Image (cartoon, rainbow, N blue to C red; front, side, top):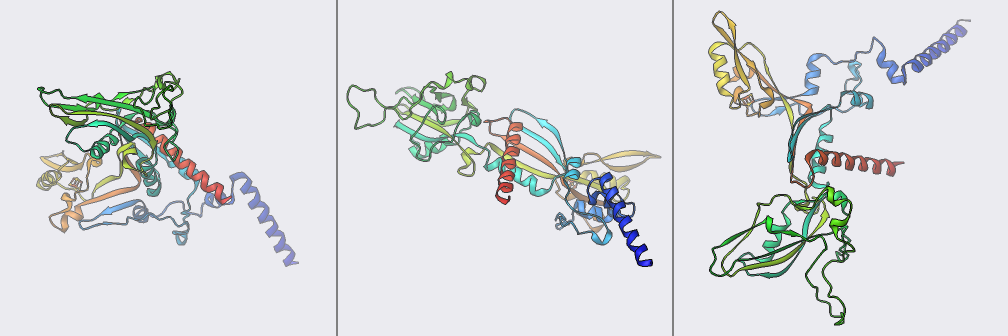
Length: 396
Ligand code: SF4
């Protein structure tokens, strides 16, 4: 009779659990909503999990704790949950100019922040000069050095409007090639001249140099190095984003009297992984948010000493009355982690704690000019999204 009673109560428990699951979503949500399950770690463990501690010799607790059962003994769930991520993830824009931007990426794993950095440097495409046809070069710069310099000039052209060139590089049309012409001469008797990028002239109709074509008959039109079907400036996409050189003041070469350069430079679409000239950023980097904590009150002369130790002015001094003063942390974000403030004896390490927030990244993007920095970041997000979709497709 007692066995029947037990089985009945189990059935009831199952029904109750099912009912609660329906109310609260998944079974995990239900378990986490129970009062007996703590949702937070004790403060010290939480600190070790979320902060890097910078000691005078080396940083410690640098790893991120990913294992879902890491705190099972404390009955705290450490699993990665999409709804938590969506709730905590934030982007805060700090500075935005034409060429660079700084923003805070909060609530993200270092691996993902690093993925964005790497994609920005080597996978977001741009246009760069890939082939240079030199008709005449009597300057002191050798042809290959001149070509290399031209390759590194940032080109202002939206790469999303272009296609990648074919692997042979022979089919050069208005959708995959931009042609620039450079023809400068320093006349005899004239002073030396400096050739700058403003001398590069965009040819929207394509190449003007005649290629060698042994099969051509005398009556046909001479062939050039491109085969454009129409002028690029007649295409509807380009008037909104005109093509040109990003900076007109970059020095290409210097010419002495009687010297001349005549060439055509053909730019194509590519990525930084192939060559750094296609990288859309001068740099893309991040640092973890600094956190400077005073572990005890630092007063009077010591406060003055602490303020003077910091080369970037992280500390200030405030009056606390009766002629007393104490140090405060006024600008922690400026901290460069030089560790000057904790040098000079163990007592300084006991007064000041230098930390970094593990999931808060101060991200800086410096664009070379092909695309504005904010668009570069959205392009990087799209590339990462594509990669994730490819992985999901391969796995399913
Ligand atoms: S680590 Fe250097 S920059 Fe940071 S607070 Fe200390 S002295 Fe200033």
